[in-house]
Amino acid sequence: MAFVNKYVLSILVLFLAFYYYSEKEEFRPEMLQGKKVIVTGASKGIGREMAYHLARMGAHVVVTARSEETLQKVVSHCLELGAASAHYIAGTMEDMTFAEQFVAKAGKLMGGLDMLILNHITSSTMTLFHDDISHVRKSMEVNFFSYVTLTVAALPMLKQSNGSIAVVSSMAGKISHPLIAPYSASKFALDGFFSSIRNEHSLMKVNVSITLCILGLIDTDTAMKAVSGIVNFKAAPKEECALEIIKGTALRQDEVYYHNSPWTMFLLGNPGRRILEFWTMKQYNMEKFIKN
Ligand SMILES: NC(=O)c1ccc[n+]([C@@H]2O[C@H](COP(=O)([O-])OP(=O)(O)OC[C@H]3O[C@@H](n4cnc5c(N)ncnc54)[C@H](OP(=O)(O)O)[C@@H]3O)[C@@H](O)[C@H]2O)c1
Ligand SMILES: *[C@@H]1O[C@H](CO)[C@@H](O)[C@H](O)[C@H]1NC(C)=O
Ligand SMILES: *[C@@H]1O[C@H](CO)[C@@H](O)[C@H](O)[C@H]1NC(C)=O
Image (cartoon, rainbow, N blue to C red; front, top):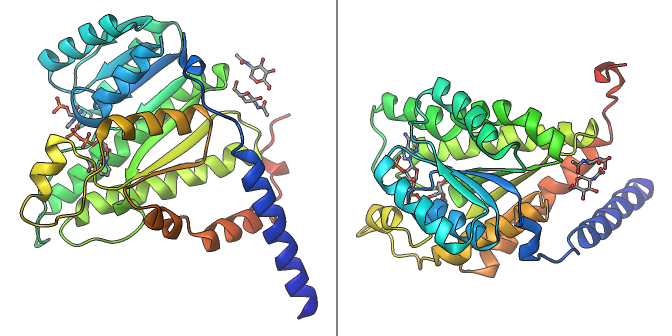
């Protein structure tokens, strides 16, 4: 028993030391200067704010969503703000062929890719779940499966650039809430998939970072309309939220938490899970998967 305690304690100390030192680097806007970035779901809300921040930092941006008209406006504002270049490609992420071709086209437009920001979601209303299986399927397709498709298409370019992936998720991808079962399922799926891929990258020395972003309620028009009359959590500002996602992704953090209350962030951190994952990773022998 004493041995086990000592063992667990030393892992905990090592882990905390690692955690503390690995988050030391400071963010500088110049980190994004000249970087080639894709932002999905960028016609409004948090996605649009991210495009504007990236433009101010002098990045190249390619934005996407379905509505061409609004994307056009976002692109011209990006150019006014100082983007190195700005383009849009309109289409729906219900269509995996579009998702795949979108990444190829964006890569061609910018001549490579440094950062893939996955942010779009299909619209959904807060309601009791009865039998709307088609909405569950659509949420999984648009909010989860298209993220996988976009990632597969982008990984060759991201490996070349030692790039980064941001996966925009939610509190609802870490803890349960009523009235949003299909959305919540798709956000939990993102954690399972992308955290596993992050482990693989770490074990196989693939230098592409994956940043899962856990957001509380943010004051976008869509979210404010969705929660109106149902919950009254205080919403945090979308501009700052967008900046925090970019910062954490540029610093190659595993996760970003953005929420009004620091207590929520502290409790969501889930040290139990982190310690178990850290320890589990130590048990793997990956020799079989290393190509000679
Ligand atoms: N706002 C919040 O309170 C909150 C909280 C936690 C997490 N989040 C997360 O933050 C991210 C952004 O949320 P938001 O509030 O900024 O959303 P939003 O304002 O509603 O923006 C959603 C974006 O996705 C696009 N989109 C919708 N359906 C699409 C489709 N089928 N194919 C391609 N693009 C599509 C929309 O443009 P088009 O309609 O033109 O296609 C729009 O650009 C999401 O991942 C969300 O889960 C938000
Ligand atoms: C990517 O990282 C590797 C290893 O650190 C380095 O040798 C290489 O030059 C980097 N490539 C780019 C494009 O930064
Ligand atoms: C991974 O890439 C980043 C960004 O280019 C670089 O700062 C870092 O040193 C690289 N890490 C390794 C282990 O190659």
